[in-house]
Length: 159
Image (cartoon, rainbow, N blue to C red; front, side, top):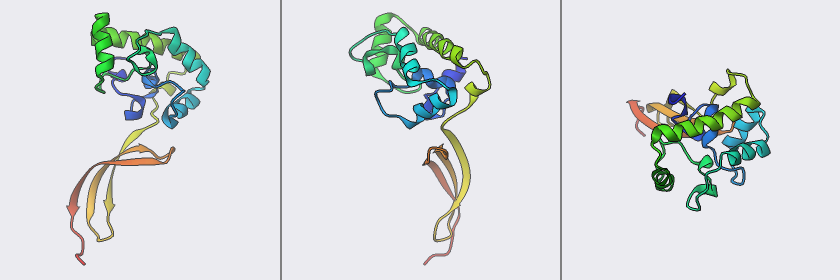
């Protein structure tokens, strides 16, 4: 499960990455869609996170339970982990405990491997006929796509 908890939900993590999501006091269509897919009401999400609360005023929402995945750099989270004497393994164990509580609300093992945000590969042409191999990131369902990488593979007609 450690490998499965590598990324934030908004960075193409599976629904298991809900353990890294922000408080519902911050608007987020990705987290909200994940909660909807899982059938978890926002109030229950907050309650579970607060049941695992480790407070520090320097953290987002003042609670380590709302902190991001280790793949995202955060000096505030890291300073709290250092103060607690926690290494990467201990932090992931903490997040797994939170995940166990979420999984009690939806025991369907298949749903937890779904993603809200994903990567897409494809070929695009511009209006001049240039052809590009592209890597996109986003959610068609939520209506956003971001271009991450592109490489020109064929030149079009110059005008």
